[in-house]
Length: 459
Image 1 (cartoon, rainbow, N blue to C red):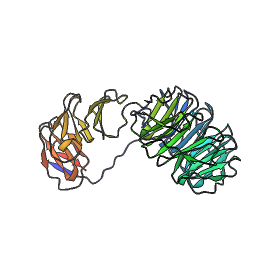
Image 2 (spheres, rainbow, N blue to C red):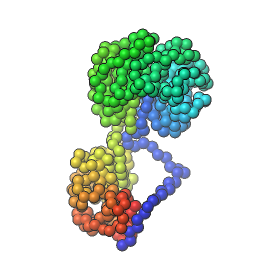
Image 3 (tube, one colour):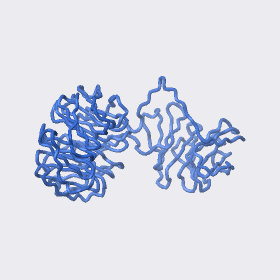
Image 4 (spheres, rainbow, N blue to C red):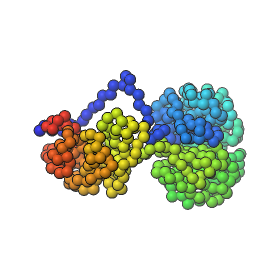
């Protein structure tokens, strides 16, 4: 038998005709940083890798739009069903006049990261970013001019009530105020040094700012004075706030938290999101219809003011560690959270077929045919799971105390698994019994492959 220890490997893909599209989760799995709805049906969300998606039916389905960039998009805003803007990393500003069918890059004149964008009408808008950056446009976002803010703090949110009155908030408790469209910016005393991620006003005097260390600030005089509100939140970071009137508002943040108030923030109650990941943005079009988005493409929707939140992201959102297809239709995937998934339609849909909380996550899965397969990883005491019915039932076979990272069978009886500290084990009876083999190394082994029962490689 020949076993080669490979220290590195390279994979070359032919991309001449390659086209990749999301299968799981749907509509996609990139982090989402901002969401904006203009009514109960029509909305957009944006995120990393230039992600922009649109819905016209309240989020039941989402269509991916071509942003023309791979840069992270931090914020999106629309003033009607056609005209909208987005901003993000490397000074990116995008504009659409047809609801996102086409997005056009605008010359921002800066390479700073832009975190927030806000328009009060078809022509007048602002964007804020790193190192005190605020830009203004008077011609619908085609041209942008730098405004002097007098600060080097990162300005993470900008909000205007009209063409004159607006605020920007950011790092170190920074809050700036303008009453002349941003020609001059006046520092306001927030009373905190915490980062403020979101600022939201319902009129020219009543507004809120939220941020790190559970901070919630409110003003009733346009920011002349800011005072703290106590939510009882266990989430350290509060990312986004939206109020639809002086009484009714929501806040989202870390730990999938959603906070809700009906008395202007004097009292807050936590709504059950049913999600597992941080939420970064929230948008309500009215008192009932709202959407929150976040990490790994999380999308939550309510039609009753948050009494119930429903995930609009289908299938599994766990980290996938391994995937294996036996033909064009039938495949299996493993997660780092103890699950095995199966598809019989080429990945269009996936079914959870195994979930054991005692398993510390699966690293690899391999099938020799449609019925017989094995899985390894965090199975207690270095075990390997085997199925002979396509994954409907699994049997554990004990190996040793080593954590196994990869498994491969050259036929229905002969297979190998590799893992930590140079571990290599072999089975000659279909995975029921396993024997140790000497690798000659104590390094971590993460992959095994054999061309026949004698010749193979591990790395």
